[in-house]
Image (cartoon, rainbow, N blue to C red):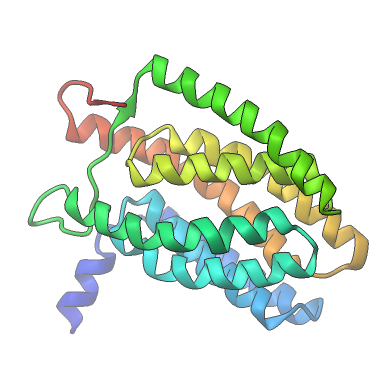
Length: 237
């Protein structure tokens, strides 16, 4: 048992351990201090664990990710962020299982079965996805506004970018982290508005702040992994 645990956490840096511990302690403290919801607390903790594992390129990030998706959708529904609800239940949830399957098929080696191989995209592919995101955001914002949703434009943009980022994540490309950083900044604003309005869901707000820190770290870490795993450049379409 001791050997198996060491295998799971042997490659964790002190920064990664301290990062996860710090945000966990802050989240739990705010849960009690501000009388937050238990569902929000659980969503925040499972979400933070999941994104740390993604940043490390670990295939088992999807297990806490599944729990996080369901709980986060429940909290988002309470704030009328319908785009977030539909995104998580109709897209993120099934993509957790698809991602787990594809990541397992693209492990670094037999010795590192929990580590995924990463790649980068061409400039042409990046431009295609940028234009697609712009068109989809405008169309979806109109739908959310008709539904009476809160902050429809930002809700739409985060939903569209999240769909794209998840595709990038399943495809194991480094560019996913740039998209996640944009998403995190916008979503922090959304939940800050909710917190300033009724003082609730602070655990979710802290979770997204943690996501932003993790996304920056994930970008740096995946770039390093890519350079280590590839002698040349691996272009994906």
